[in-house]
Amino acid sequence: PKIVVQVMPKQDLLDPQGKAVAKALERSGHKAIKAVRIGKRIELHYSSTPTAAQLAEAQKIAESFLTNGVIEDVVSVTVEQD
Image (cartoon, rainbow, N blue to C red; front, side, top):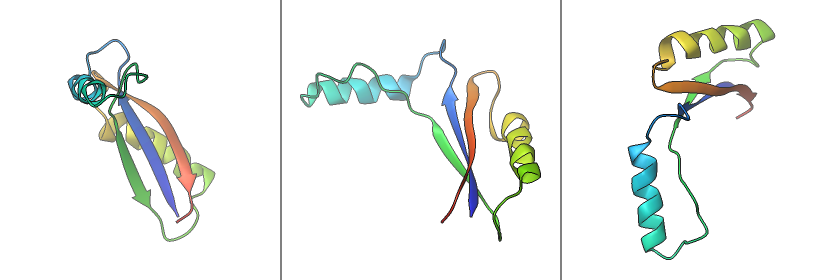
């Protein structure tokens, strides 16, 4: 079991990677895709199913340690089974 943290660039900031991928997709004929945003997925693995307290702790860790709050937002912190 694991806790998955998903992080994305803040909405009001440029996402150069996303823009580059969007342009490449458009050049490849994928005209319906309007925009691409690229973030990151972080997995915290546990030996047993994480508790509610561990999930809350992971949220704090994500906000204070795993992201740069100036340019990134934590968009989700969820438990997943392997």
